[in-house]
Image (cartoon, rainbow, N blue to C red; front, side, top):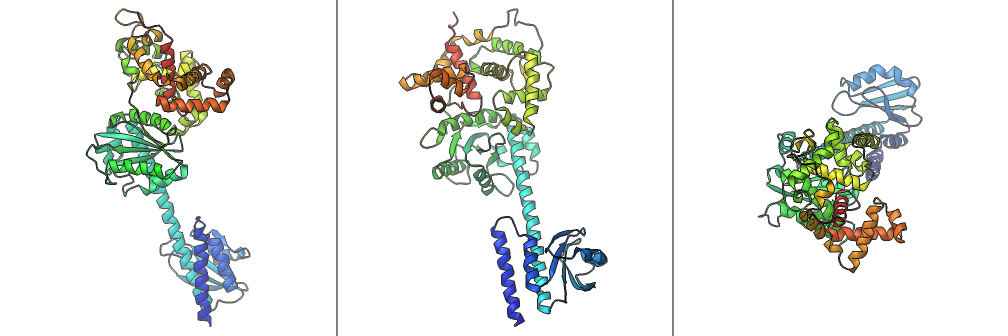
Length: 506
């Protein structure tokens, strides 16, 4: 009879564990102890290896524990496996859990000693709790590994953004990702839910913590973005383990999920990952306005290389000269903040938004400029682009005279009224020449005049704010520029509109 009852108890124990595991939070020792206490008519506690009660039934008599300390110490230290004793009028059974010392101890206190069947159930329950605890430890270790792998992937991506391939390889010594052996890469920028981003990065992860010949990186600035660096191999076939196959997988994900979108850069050398990422951002903005929700970057020559090199370098030097003694950290933060929202910069660098604002106020004070003005940010971004990765990379650094080769330093207007700049601006704005485009052009001009404030733009044009934003999204598609997420596309728009308002150089 007791054997049948014992079998029924075990079935119930497994059912209880399965019920809790199905909740997704792991087994709760308190719930298991409550179940055990009901089955054997006793109170139960789980005493941790340090001697503290980790979980217990409501009526467990904690006052008996001090008298049990010597026995608990021997059990926790591995010198005993189980013990039975008395504490006043209570019959106490103690059982150590797990193989390694120090270990937790299960303490059962009741009015009478447990029957053989009840004692067996206590042992089985203790074994289940020990296994669940080990499973929980393994799960914690696995989550820690996933977090560290995610951090390392982002560190590699950051090194590639800075163009430092040597640093990227040094950080991964012993397990260098295959991507770093590629000659070129494309950046696929996937817009998806935060939950799906975590899931996708994990299910496509290989044993080394990478993604085959690619790398999936959580964007810390925009939580809906999964940055996918994919080795570009002209000979790749449709094998899902190849670079081409990884791109195919991402496209398939977009087809199967109506809320996804995908922007794809042109192929770039690994040292130009920053340029590829910028292209992917613009392509993603365009993709979100297409039925397929996938767009590759439409290559257009950027403005910077079209400007006269010596004159442009001299202007950038003069513009940035007041920053010659500014700390590098402030300059790096400012470079990001002229393109990304301040909150995104804070998340990207894992600092507070107030810290970002503090650095920007220092730059504003030094330059005598207001960085909340979109035209000012565009000019500063252009100066940074002309100065290379670090401001002192511009020929002559911050120092030198106010001119170059004995000539006065040109103004920004003088740089932008050159014929190559005018040709660039005309090409940039060409998609806005038809009837629909002219309405968008009017909205864009008003939006820049309103310092990219959609509400002010709407009041000025007599439109609704939603209409203004719809115009901006349509312009993103036509111009292949991101206008609503980062500032890089806005800066191109500012320069293009400014150039078209300047008379060409004579």
